Length: 481
Ligand code: FAD
Ligand code: NAP
Image (tube, rainbow, N blue to C red):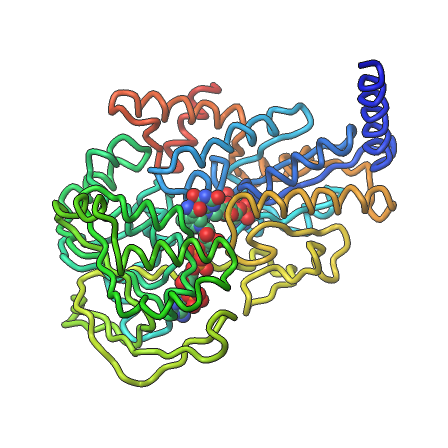
């Protein structure tokens, strides 16, 4: 027992000495751009690693949490529990949230660099990849990013025009976002109504005529980007039935054994669903009124329309080139088929954008030009999360990014590579005030949060999100004055 306590004590002192080693008595002040998971995990690591370091988190919206609030599906509330951890981080006296500030517009990167010991770009991926095919700009051809933002209450997507008076919807892409949007289109309304999906989305979905959702993948079943939990959830969707062509799956049995475990389990589930579904699943699907279809080895080449009305999607058949288990490429055969549909959702990935003219940016990849989180050619500037390595990975992966970035900055501090004793947010907030920008603090966010929860209560929902920025700002001003 004594030995154990002694060990604990020495471990504690060793940890403390390590923390102190990271930065000297001088104050370090770090500014973070964005308030999604990457930002909060970086902040957490920094605050933990150095006792005289302060962090300010700048967010373009009046509300925090990035894709946890505006991306994660409303019917996955458990994923949003990370918000509790993030709130603890910002409730630390040494951490501030500065909302309603768009970096690159309201304040420049140069101004932030001037005010802070280090600046971390954690602003995610604010745009989307395009198919670059004819008809992509027609009404009812909508990017997954806009559709997700619409049902999740993202202010910029609230005027999205969409027509659900269609029986067939094509979703391009075989990723988890594609499954999220398919699920939202197919889930019975009585289940969705209990989530934090917006009132407006519920209203639109209540008159939806959607019967069939077609998920189109350019490669084969071994290359799907979605994961097993999300696929299984689709197979159990009430009143919906999967339609898979057994011919797409039969050959997979030969490869199963050599696959890495997660891919093997997913492929087995795909195979079983398509080729030998369980009796209980078949029973469950017997009363389905809607169907969802997985199409493989198809790429969109043209959107078919009459005037402004979508009639279908022309797909080219692909074949795979390269070793089947080693990321083979989809290559067009030039043979086309037409899929009839009245709405097209493109779910082929998000994309990062350059927010400031001074920022080194890799436009091809849609990421800040960086080497392991250090922005190339700009000492003191770091990037993390989706804006640093592209729009891939779940919150857990982004957590690792944030922790690594935090450690990197602490190491640079320890190595005296950074300038300390910088003024931090005071000077920035003064400039913003002079420019007439209303900032939102974390206490202000708590008021918005409470108002949303209160409004949701009467409808039996966890919250009813405010979808209008001026409404949020008015509420904050009213309550403060
Ligand atoms: P983001 O979460 O996008 O945060 C970036 C923040 O920066 C945003 O708040 C944005 O408003 C802000 N910002 C942008 N530009 C500026 C600017 N100029 N100035 C100031 N602020 C700015 N992962 C899971 O583990 N489970 C899930 O269920 C899940 N569902 C997902 C659903 C969807 C639709 C998507 C797209 C992703 C999902 N993910 C999920 C992945 C997860 O959301 C990401 O891994 C994570 O959010 C990436 O974090 P980030 O901080 O890099 O970016
Ligand atoms: P993703 O996982 O990268 O999937 C994108 C899909 O689009 C892939 O099937 C890809 O096919 C396809 N695609 C890309 N370019 C294409 C093109 N030009 N033509 C046709 N198809 C194309 O991206 P995502 O679905 O946006 O998800 C982003 C990240 O968020 C992922 O890591 C995902 O796991 C995560 N996320 C997680 C959850 C969850 O945990 N529940 C929910 C949502 C999102 P190829 O493979 O051939 O490139």
